[in-house]
Structures are given as structure tokens and as C-alpha cells.
Length: 258
Length: 258
DNA sequence: ATAATATAGATATCTATACGTCTAGATGAT
DNA sequence: ATCATCTAGACGTATAGATATCTATATTAT
Image 1 (cartoon, rainbow over the protein chains, first blue to last red):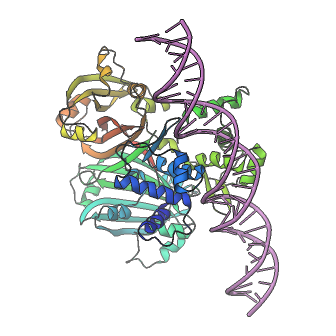
Image 2: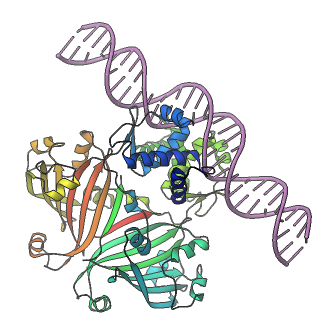
């Protein structure tokens, strides 16, 4: 479930009492509960009032309460036990860790200053591997953007992105020196391909001579290698990347559910 | 949403016409649609009949249809566009890749012969790090199980698991030589702590002398290092592990959503 | 031609109600 | 005491509406 902007709107309406119109009831209920959990008003492990009680308290029907709590269950903040009740989970696992973000969003979230310099920017034929990942024919063109990325002025990642030229040809119309790598995904969205999902393969490797030279590290240093395909809402692959991360500077945290 | 056994039951009832009782309508609808997508009867990118039409066709109410399709949307097989319709996604991203599995389940799924030999089995005091991860006091005991794991007779992983002794003391009652590492999680479940979620931090490292010796690899070889905390349904941490995977033999695939 | 407007169809939200199923605890029989 | 049974409460499933909102398309006005 995706409800980023709804969260913001509803949170807004917590401090600012005005303008609660237009926000669905189940979103208000969800965020009210989320806030009660965050503030400790609802303690960890505690049983919530029954769905009937909550429905009465919020002045809505039971199904609406369930719609709100279901979202929080997906987020891992609540869990239900059939015939018993709905409870607040103990240590509130941060679901955010499993949310798809790009380098810049992630850096911003953690107060890190991110910067990218473009090393290459070209239109090339898709290699077999790239064509397969992006569901392209072998002779089709892709835009290749190679960037070197810094977090707080430390070089951490060499990044090779490949984008279907057929879908995003306007991208290359922009003037190069100031090309905005940071908001590539919003360009996808504007063209009707909002980023929805990514599948990434992660490996541990060693830096070879070439990579070591570019990233100013020693050959043989550990590299967290990531191969990622990014998909839009409708399942269209919009971006394929090779990603070489400095092993001593970069770690990846993911949350998995059963 | 968790519905493993429901899937099996509903699929059963596809081939075997009997015994569709007890299976919720929305599960039948969900699996019917899933099967139609898998078989290609519903083509990729295609628009589904409207919710009203589906409701009529299946002879249920519209809300029940939505309950079924919502599950498939969470799985990434469908997506909705407000005011337009519900569609089949293009390349069916395998949601399974982001599902929490253990080494043995994962091996079985891929037809790999998995084996584990126990190197150490002891009860020790929790270290600060382990205590923090498992929400224990510093003087509490944990069960430490160190195993060496093979996939198709190749050594791939050195695995250090730490389990709260307070919760799972019976585990150490079993006779050691045949201790069943494979079904540790079902032991958790039997004690009322079904495994639900895991948070794992992934890094690229180099094998040191000690690790190289145990795993029969070269010192300085790439290691995919994983630090994982496993949580039960109610958020109780049930297992903390250090996991050293051979970089050249092991890769990790995860799916992230936005 | 272009822009504003109306409309039909589809999903989004929500209600009120009903019955099913599960769990924990009380009750009662052995 | 122990075990089976009953029961109240809570979540699970399902219905049949109603209204809101969004999108694409057709229509109309400029």
C-alpha cells in the first residue's frame, strides 16, 4: 500500500485542526493510532480496544476501523490474533528500511550530504543482459549514465544506470553539465511511469584495478555489488543499474516478511 | 498478508473439485485470478473486467472482489488506476524474493541440497550487542549455535545464531549429535512465537585468517556479511545471527517497494 | 482549432448488518 | 484434580447498498 502523501496530509491535520476535509476517515484513524503508538499513549504489547469499541469511539463503522488498522498491520506496528484482539507490536520494526529509495532520498533521510558527478552520458545499444532486464530488443537504444557518488564528500559508489531511450528520450535533451541525476525518478513519473518496485541482486566482490583507480581505493578492497532493475507501477522496467559500493563505507539494511 | 496454507487449499480445490467448503470466497477469487494470470488467460497489461462485472460473474459482492484483488495487488500481480480500471502488471515481479526464508527453505525451493554441521553449541551470557538486538538484560543467557552450511556439498556459509535461553530453554534438552537446526523456526512457532519478520544489515567484507581456515577459502576473499535479527509475530526478537557467506558462491536477491 | 464543460464508467470510501470461527475462561461432570 | 462443554467476546468473512472522486471521452462554446 502506498500512502506517502496521505500521511503528510493527515499529520498536518493533527497539529493544524483545519482542513481535515478530503482526508479519508480510515487514514485519519490510521494516523491517529500511529501517533498514539509513537507517543507511547498506546504501549507496546498492549491490546487495542476491540474493533467495535474503536468504531464507536471514532464514530465510524467497523469496516472503516479495519481498513485503518490493516495498514498498520502491513507496516508491522500492529498484529491481530483471531478471537483475541489487536495488539501493538513490541519493538516497532522500521518498515522504512524495506522501502525503495534512491541514493539521494536515502541520504536526505539520514542527514547526509549527497553529491553525484557525471562521468559518462551516452546513448548506446542495449547489451543482451540490459535488453533482457529492460524487456527491450537487442538493437534498441538505452541511455547510459555513469556517475560517481559522494556521501559527505566521501566517494562511496560508482553507479551505472541504463534507461530505455524509447520511453525517456527527452532526458537527453537537457544540457549536460547541469543534468539533474537526483530527480530522475520524478522524470519517469511525469512520463506516466511512477517508480513502484525494484528487484536487486546483491553480491560481495573485490575491487579490480580499474574500479580502484576511479574510486580511489585499493585493488582487492571489498565491494558491495548491486544489480538492480527498477519497475514502474504497471510493471514496465524503467531503469537497470550496476552499483559498486565501497564495502567499508556502505551497508544495506532490508526488512523481510514471512 | 500471510496466506500460504490458504493458497495450497484453494489450489487443491482447482484440480480436485471437492472440498471447496471452508475456503473463503475472496481466497477462491484471488486464486482463480492468479491462475488465470499464470496461464496467460489474462494477458499482461490487460484490463480486468470492472469490479462490478467481476462481482456479478463470481456471484459475490463488490467488496469481496476487492478483498481478493487487493491481495494480488500486494503481490505485485495487479495494479489499480483510480477511475480507470484494474490491470495485470507486465513482467510479474516475483514477490517471493522478498519473503523471509531460512537457508534450508531457500535451498529446497531451488532444488539445492542443503546440509549443516554444528561446530559449537553452548549457553553463554549475551554480549552487549546481542543483548540489545534480542532485548535482553546483559546478564541473561543465550543459546549459541555455530554451524557450517553446505549447498550441494560446497561450503558457503558460516552461521552464528543466538537465541534467548529464557524463551527457548527446551531447545538445549535435545541430544546434540542429531540436533535439528533445520526446523529451529518451527520450534519457535510451537512455543507461541511464529517467525514473522527479519531486519538484516548486509555488508561486503574480506575473509580474515580464521574465517578462511574454517571455510577453506583464501584470506582476503570476498565475504557477504549479514547481521540479522528475526522477530516473531508480536515483535519479540527470537534470533540474532551473524552470517558469513562466500562472496563467489552466494548472492542475495531482494524486492523493494515504494 | 482550442478550451471549457458535461458525462459515463471505474475505482475509492463508507455504512449498517449478519453470521462464522476462534480463543480464553467459566462452568460442570467425572 | 482433570477433562469436556459452554459461553462471551473478538476478529474473519460477506452482503447490499450509497456517495465521492477520478479519468477518459464526447460535446459544446469560444
